[in-house]
Image (cartoon, rainbow, N blue to C red):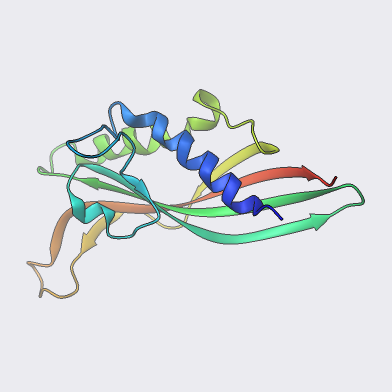
Length: 156
């Protein structure tokens, strides 16, 4: 039987990768969109913008001939910075591009009919817990979003 969550996650990754210009460009040896990953170490591999994905909670309501699925994907948005000036303005533009995807590049495959976004907390600086303050700040900011993907799947 097909894993419906995996179908939705793949569609969401593809949707995010449409932001390859300017956020997820190709680099030497890597295709555009490599910065969107389920690997939590990807932000340490260079580049400026990253999104790591992991499964969240879900609900599955079975009806007689179909199921209604509500999948949650936790997407952590990372942005590398070199200066504090305009840091949050630049970050908000990146986040805005992501949360506008249902309007700019909607997903209409695999029974997906709606997406919503909500923050799991405020954006902040990524701290290296292995280093003592004040030298423990990295050059990254991050925020985790909960993306809800609603799907209707017919049974055969």
